[in-house]
Image (cartoon, rainbow, N blue to C red; front, side, top):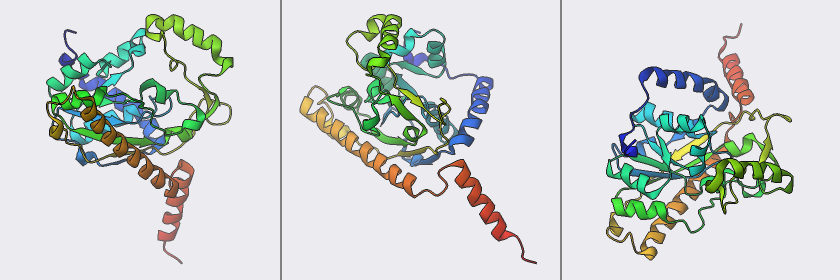
Length: 288
């Protein structure tokens, strides 16, 4: 395509098929969404949040829920490596994701679209076991610079639950995964040069299998951050850093709030939800 802004949403029959395919996953995770009313009526806007382990466990639920509740298809900036994988890159294209370059993001914002960005990128998706829910944005300023340049709001959001679905057996930098890292580098070619975040950790879900444990997913969208006070200062690193830090603080607070909700949730797993439903039903039955 000439411009990422020229993307056409999938046809209705494909949307219905994808939504149908997601139903078992929704039943498995029973997702909870908060704050969708904080999304603007229209773009441009940057939706900035945390990447969870593996990165694809919760993202489809976010995109479809926003479309279902707000009637908007958000676009996602994704790691360059996705477009090196045959078949998968076609899925990314159909879903509206684009290679996460500044030019692509700038084009989407200029076209008035809502764009999802995970500043932690692949580094968060391949996190080590001791880094659970830690934001790994380091010194990245790109998203904040582009938001200031476009004069658009930043909507912070958080996702919690995916980390509890898996137990990491081998971190991505384990020496035992060296052959797999070498194979991945050969597939990705130049895209893998100089990167230490190209290998996913080896994890298990239920027992020794890769089936994710049934954990509820929690999502929250926070109050938009108005970037207009920094208008015209996109080349000022101090100003852009201030915007980045405001967004990071907001996302971390959202994550902390969701983790507290998760800890207190007595319906966190399907078994707990079933038990509560049966208990309520039994209490509602008339006594003889």
